[in-house]
Image 1: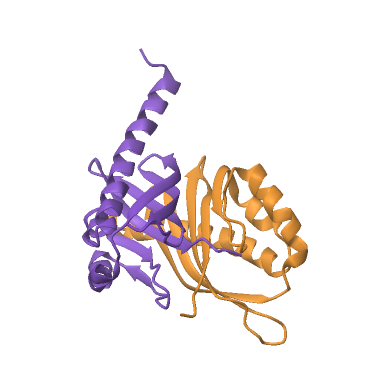
Image 2: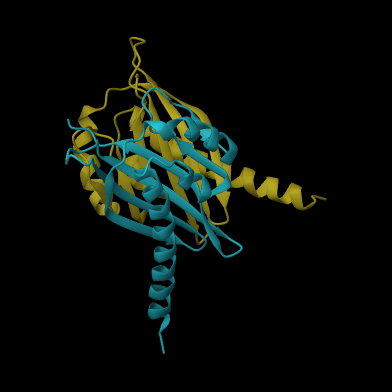
Length: 140
Length: 140
């Protein structure tokens, strides 16, 4: 039988697995030039700080997010990615996933690295993304 | 008497006021070159994507955060700031505050602009910051 700590560990593990699977589903599509993955894992009220240079708005709501992502589809070169150093902070029905992202083109060259914050919320048993913030790692 | 919507509005307003007051307390200290404000509003398990160029780690825990911030104190020029377009997403005991930040030096010149994500959690009735992610607005 699990003690309290065991139960908490088990809740954390289950949330972590579910959330990482969602994030990877979006990132894997992205790596194939398909931008629909993040729309699929997003809640209606999702907000997003875009990561395209020159675009500075906070996107609000799934419809605006979809509209923003659609024209990007053709601009993403196919690549492999690594999610480095993922960490999940779990607070009941809310969770904060943070990680570093590394992308590699077929010729072996590296894409710019990113830091990512991805906030999830669980409603009716389903985790969905409610906020995303990506920022480029500076080579300063 | 408030209906359900009224009660929800009132909960949202109260959380918003408390969280905005915390964030402003940290930003106001920062504007005076005092970096202790963010340590004061942080929970023990706070994580932070730093915003100093060249530093790329995710800081984990209040002690590491304090150690990171201390030497920055002397490097912040006194300034006035504006929190632009703040938005709070409330999910029970978790809340996501997002805003744009604008800073102005005494001579009127502008500091670089930032986008900020600040995630809060309420425990024992107290809201505390559990994650921060700042990224510079690109002039692309």
